[in-house]
Image (cartoon, rainbow, N blue to C red; front, top):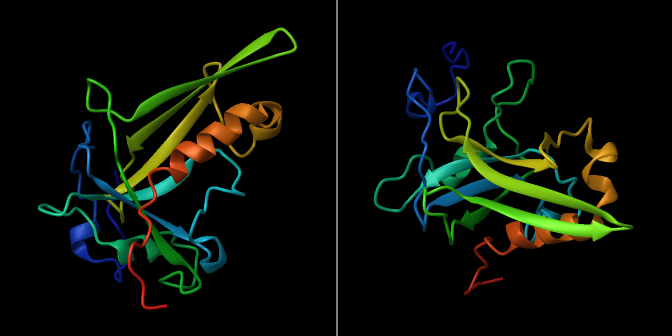
Length: 178
């Protein structure tokens, strides 16, 4: 992997050939940037394809802080930070026996059965080691923004269940001064 070329990204976030994290822990935090008007549930209206997050890790040994997800890691963008976004925090609440977050959802429609799988994958990029994605497959095919209309868009129940699953991990504010 190449080195980070963006001097405004803190060195602690650079990948520097560190290996990907293969196992997660219940309680690990994930950070996702969202528009202020969608911060309570950024998954409600989003196209369910590959969704980027930063792995915060746990409170005893953090990998990143919430504000790190606001850095732009694209070399062709002029802004260093997304100033028009806020941070949504998720907590991993369950894992399988392999310490992975991976779940399946099925739907039968007009005699056809569809199976969707969602999996959290640590996907470091040169300037953001904590970068993760929720990857989704439909009947074994990776759902991308380009393939969405031909794949997942046809399966409303599965889309709704995936969005509800992601929303269930959002840490809601219990106390607020607002």
